[in-house]
Image 1 (cartoon, rainbow, N blue to C red):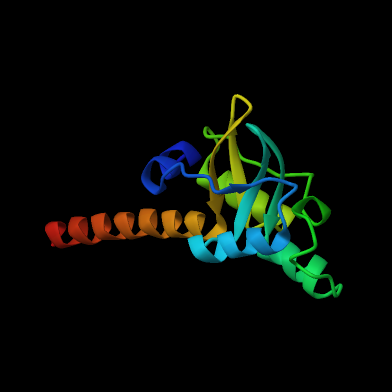
Image 2 (cartoon, rainbow, N blue to C red):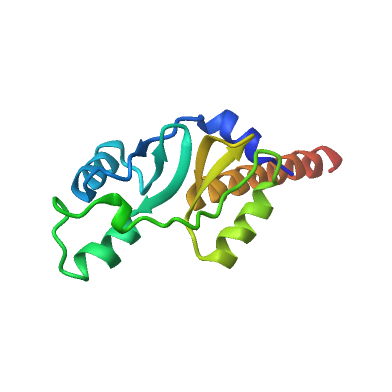
Length: 144
C-alpha cells in the first residue's frame, strides 16, 4: 500500500496558498493560472482554511456576490479535513469519499507539506493496478 508521503515524493510538495484577506477574484485567478482546483489559506505558516472552486461557485456566484469585493475569509472552509504523510492512499480515498471533499492538505508536525487531490489518488491507484496486471501477464506468459 502506497503512502501519501510516497505519492507526494512523486508528485511534488508544492503548496499554492492564499491569505484570508485576499480577494476571491485574486485567488480564483491564481487557481486558474496554476491550473489547480484548491488552495490552502494560510496566515504565515499556519493553515487556517481551504478555498476551492466549489466554494467560489456556491458562495460567490450563486449568492450574487462580487468576487473582486469578497474576501477569501468570507467563503473559505475553516473545518479543514487533512491527511498525514503516513496514511495510505486507500485511507485518504475513503476519507475524501466520506467527507465529500476533493482536496486534502497534508500536515506533518503542524506544517502543510503538500496537497493531494482525488485525481492524484486515482492516478496512483491506477498506476499500481497497471503494474500488478503487467506483472501477472509476464508471469502467465512465462509459465506457458
